[in-house]
Image 1: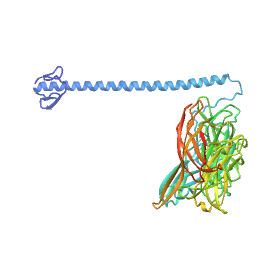
Image 2 (image 1 turned 180 degrees about the vertical axis):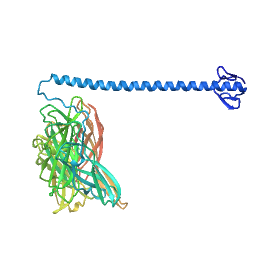
Image 3 (image 1 turned 135 degrees about the horizontal axis):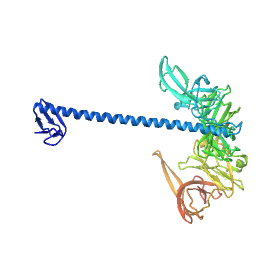
Length: 558
């Protein structure tokens, strides 16, 4: 093989990748050809190869120097642009200031402000271990009450708890105060998680880095126009109504509420944090809040409670500015209102004004009818009647307590209705539960609202087209067979209006010759009904009392 010494290429394949592999020996890395050359030629070839390498190194060094030069030029241009912007902004500020009349307040530039605050200004009370929840689901927590003595508002202040078993560190947890801005002089509780399954002999508390809110504005405190603290068993709720009564036509948003409970010694025994139902509230607007309050220390009764409301101002672009308010903590030295734990209390029911309320005296529970179920256990049937002549009761409900003499003997909830029109009857079962000892009842009504006629219900035409008396039997425990009477009722439901009616609920009741209830059943699988159309229904109803003589219906629409 020959080598072209002018171009330093392999004579076989033309590759320029040549490698010295021995004395006067060169190998082509591409085709593997080996060439032997004379000494003088070899020396001359080595010199040429060295020259090529040196030239390549020189080019690489030149390119790197040019790259660094360009980078330094770009950095210099960037620094010059920044300095020019700062200079122009300063000149503009001086020009604006020179044009303002004497005595005019200058705007404050908030850039480059150090917002950090010394942590020793947030004072921590003595920590206390508490149980949150009840029974086997109770969770251990560390209760700490923090007080802001920094003289400045604090944004999302946090506390870190480090737990030890003797001198050994076992865990570390962090919790923020349940409020976005803690005003100077205010206190707020925090519940910090404790390690599960580990022995804790002591803990050390450390306040996290403190800072003011990035932006804030002073404004009037926000209060509830109507508020109630209610308790049902162990459950405590704070419900309230909020009105935007600001005179500056501002839109408020981000409304949050912190409620705190105290015992008669002033110790914190519970708190809860929640938000308004509306995300934004226009001037004159109204919204409500329903806060579930977690309790601990259940041996102590609630002697006092307070609440505070935080909110933001929403500008046209949608950005929000927290509002600082002085003396915003509203305290009440009283316990909660107590209600039966079985009552289903809606927020709007609790907050209704007196003029919006339905008088429970206009609701009547008709005398109970003694009956038997399909295995001959004793039961009672009742009917709830709206005796008002001009008002619809909304979401009627209550708890019927049964007694054997003076001893309580179970309860029955009146639920399932969205409304009851004047004169309508809603059927009720008092389910079997040692009914042989049943002697009397007492009703506790929930707070209820009223509506004027014609009310919320869309009109339907319900027709009963047929009834068929039947006998049935049931085998109990593979040993006892019972026979009972039932009635198959068929009919149709028609929509005479001009709009589709959604879910329809239909109660079909059997009555004896005296009009007393003798059995009923709910039909809740009817489909939506288009205008002018009708749908059929068929239902089997167990006859619990005397023989039926007629059928009545009650319906609701959504």
